[in-house]
Amino acid sequence: MEVIIQPDAAAAVKLTARIMGDALRKNPEMVFGLATGATMEAVYAELARMCREEGLDFSNAKSFNLDEYIGLAPEDKNSYRYYMEQHLFNHINIKKANTHLPNGMATDIPGEGARYEAAIAAAGGIDLQLLGIGQDGHIGFNEPLSSLGSRTRDKSLTPVTYKQNCIYFDPPESMPRRAFTMGVGTILDARRIVMLVTGEHKADIIAKAVEGPVTSMISASAIQFHRNVVVIVDEAAASKLEGKDYYRWSFENEPCWNEYR
Ligand code: GLP
Image 1 (cartoon, rainbow, N blue to C red):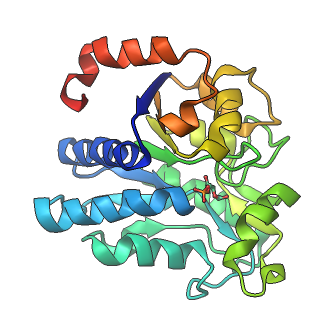
Image 2 (cartoon, helix red, strand yellow):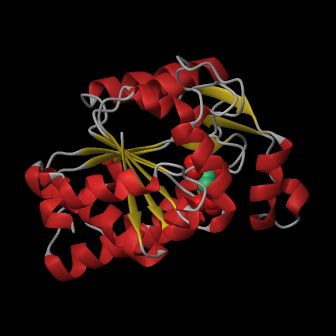
Image 3 (cartoon, rainbow, N blue to C red):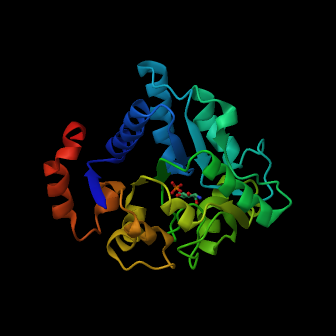
């Protein structure tokens, strides 16, 4: 794992988008794993800018999102499908048919997880998975005690997640309490993981996930098992990391980061 500390959130976002853009230029048929949440809005705005101004070409790319609320239709303003269209898909030249999210309206709940897994496999697996982290340490909606080998399935959301996300709903109580999410095992199958975490409110949880023991209580800690993962943080989110000096040294000196410094 590599941890890259950037001076502020804007720089962390830019670096994240740049890594994604470079990966797409190298492989125009990239299969992206995508995340939602407030943190990612600026990443998608930057990718949209790169598409518009720099000709970044998504026409042969595919995407699979991590999760979707159960019971929300695609056109619901709080669905993650709606979020993705508003923040990214409507602003880049990706083919809508190549963008995938779990179907929040699926009636066959176990079947939907299996269908999504099969779709990812049929696309050849995920090349680059973008991740954020929830306040309770979740990735996707893999709440505490999610098996580290779990696959796409339905999951009940914790009170912490409810508190974090219900502010987007009107009324807040209308937020669904269940969601489909890729499993931790599904996420770990991605060939590369890029996690972006910004803000002081995430400092505690990212320190636990990166430097603490691997535990299903903090599903993000499972990324420690992955062989190709970079965690990009701003100074605020990095404030509780014990190994900060080493991470900085490593970023400054590793040849693979030459073009990104
Ligand atoms: C939701 C998503 C997660 C995301 C998290 C962080 O819970 N299911 O995939 O990482 O939000 O959100 P934010 O960026 O708003 O802190």
